[in-house]
Each structure stands twice: as C-alpha cells, then as structure tokens.
Image 1 (cartoon, helix red, strand yellow):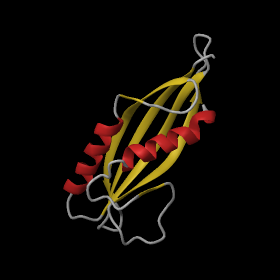
Image 2 (spheres, helix red, strand yellow):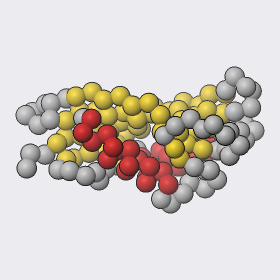
Image 3 (spheres, one colour):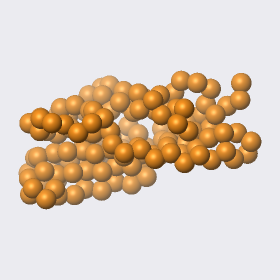
Image 4 (tube, helix red, strand yellow):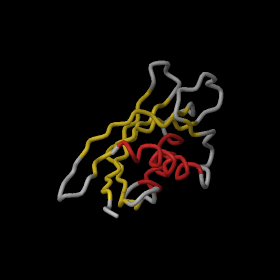
Length: 134
C-alpha cells in the first residue's frame, strides 16, 4: 500500500536510530558518496504488493536494508544485524492513519564485497498492512 510508504520509512528510521545502534555511523536512504564512516545502514529497495483480502484494502510492503562494515571478520556486521532483528522482527508498527501493521524480518544475508575489505549485510523486512475502515 503505497499510501503508507512514507509513514513506514519514517517508523523504520526512528526504530533504527532511537536509541542509536552502538557503533553505527548513520542511517540513510541513499548511497553514500563519502565512504569514510563505517559501519552504516542504508534503507534500500522497496517492493509493494497489494492484497485486498476479506473486504479490507491492504498489502505487503518489503523494505531491504543494507548494512555496511569494514571491520575485519563478520562479528561487527552480525552484531548490528542481530540488533536490527531484535528491533524489527514480529513487531507491531505504529504508523499514521487508521491501519494495522506488523513487521517481520523475511531473510538475512551476509556477503563479502568484491573489494575484499567491506562486509555487506542484507535484510528484507516485510510490513503487512490492513487499512481499517473509518
């Protein structure tokens, strides 16, 4: 449901920044031009699948998070991903407008970037929304 896209991103940003995740140097929704401050979280790609079931409009909204780390090994990356999981998995989401919404972490993946230095975590977070009739 695209009408909730901005409210979901706002909720997601607040959930990732308040309180700050220890050691993370920012959360943004664009690729950084300056790559000096690692680790950081990027709010990435979004997909939206309408599902108007049972007479109520709704759908699934999936937001992909990218976590970037340059710490040797995987400990820093996996620690940050575990904190994000705790904050976002199986959570009721409070967004503007008459709706019900909850989030689930669909999947996680950790990769080594081709540069041989950067670690890249990927997390897909699914938001299931049902618009309540007023």
